[in-house]
Length: 158
Length: 158
DNA sequence: CCGCCCAACTTGATGTGTCAACAACTACCA
DNA sequence: TGGTAGTTGTTGACACATCAAGTTGGGCGG
Image 1 (cartoon, rainbow over the protein chains, first blue to last red):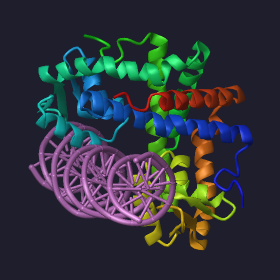
Image 2 (spheres, helix red, strand yellow):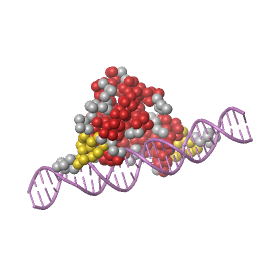
Image 3 (cartoon, chains in turn blue, yellow, brown, cyan):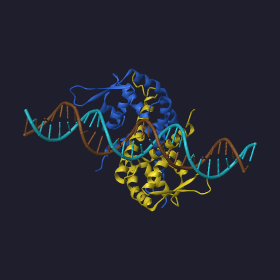
Image 4 (cartoon, rainbow over the protein chains, first blue to last red):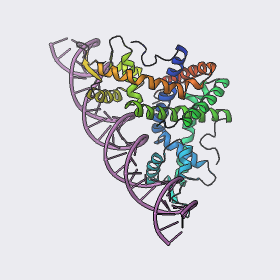
């Protein structure tokens, strides 16, 4: 009954899968803990604010923001609600465009992202980027795209 | 104010980081959703049961199980509590060994893992393994180890 | 043999994510 | 014009994770 959980994977595949767990499980946890500790903000919250900060007018429609951060609209709505309460961003209905709503980063929000960015980038470097050879970086990009495509291809199978 | 969130990363580094988000965010979400749908069990629950099923006596000390599944003891304790209620596993104090407790997989638990395994492995193949060239598999393993080492090296900085 | 400390869990409060239902609009078509 | 379907967001209930505190048992120094 040995090797049940991964019985159908070859040894090298199994290794890759186990290694991938580090990326899937430990890395997000480590980043989240560190962001929380250093900046009082979730990794996901940082992503949201950061994406907004990259827009020329610090504004983006909610559904687009959801796509950019790989989150459901529902999750985003909850998070934006909280961030709004903290006055880091604000929402506004876009007139004459159905239920479309835009989110914009406030000055306070921008300040927070700016303050949090260096620590975030440092963590990303320390845990991932700086540990990789240039060719490994390239492969990682390829893998990411492949996985993304795979998931997008089969989101729901009755 | 462009590129704020990733301003300190080069273009190729930024690509790798964005691609990595697919692994970090979309992959776990996809796997979790699928496991839940197909087997009525969390990805993490599956890992716990699966690790136990690989032990000769289907038994392991809680702290070791926590290490194997990269989880905190607290998280594991909660989860084991739930799994115990579902009669998929059971706990027993190890006598004369401090507070040490062992968890063992019940027959019902084993049956569930066995039933869930094919779907799990299929998903892992479909979303990740089968999308990768052999050399990419190898690189992924390397990356995983590197990241793991990096995180282990700096878990807490005052 | 007593007291302190550490290791191995457990517990409860709080926050966050997810899912399913609902609500608000627009657009299209008869 | 009125109905119906499709987008886009919001909400509430529930499940789960996390964190900080508490508990329990052993070891060890004095």
